[in-house]
Length: 252
Ligand SMILES: Nc1ncnc2c1ncn2[C@@H]1O[C@H](COP(=O)(O)OP(=O)(O)OP(=O)(O)O)[C@@H](O)[C@H]1O
Image (cartoon, rainbow, N blue to C red; front, side):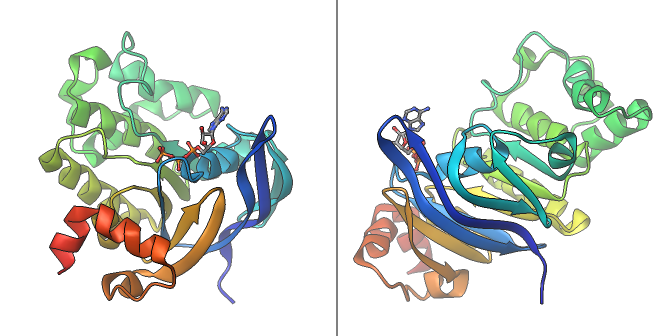
């Protein structure tokens, strides 16, 4: 049996009386690229944030590579294994810190000593040479910032990346570059991806399977071939396909 990178069972997250995540269960095997789609407010980010410990889940279970986690608490081992990349590269990087400092921080927290080599390698991997090392993040373009955010996630050599709309704040041409960079990193490192996107063309390009969310629940899971054939079980998913115009245009 393939080992699960991530095993989520009956996960529930509430904000006061409101159930943002309602008994969600997902099994994601090691090495898979898994997409999460759904209308705005359906709970996609809440799910990623609950895995990352940024939202507390009140019931259900979470296992990461066989280790169980609950509530908010995540240990160092978790952050060595799981890293998250957010939508907004402006909000997620401190503007007055140099790239060097931004990359050094996770290494220092986790006690790495070979920082020089790791920083150089990480910049190389995301297609930014060492010339970027002492720039401030406010001097970088959106695409360059997102490359730094990805370098910061990869520098700890995680096994799983949680990607929350990683390209939707970027211009279309830059989006493709960042997606290719992520795909290459996944191949090179054998990573598992869980990627949220409202863009079905992105999911179709990047993922092998996906879950469709509505009102905090998973309404269906499918593989990407089914999505491409429009072989979907619910009208809700059909509507999402129509709403994601590029997808319909691209696939038709
Ligand atoms: N910290 C919070 N406090 C209160 N309500 C929240 C909080 N975070 C999310 N919610 C609510 O939970 C629901 C799910 O939000 P979530 O951000 O997970 O949706 P989403 O599917 O990622 O949407 P989008 O595609 O617009 O980003 C929404 O109704 C949202 O308003």
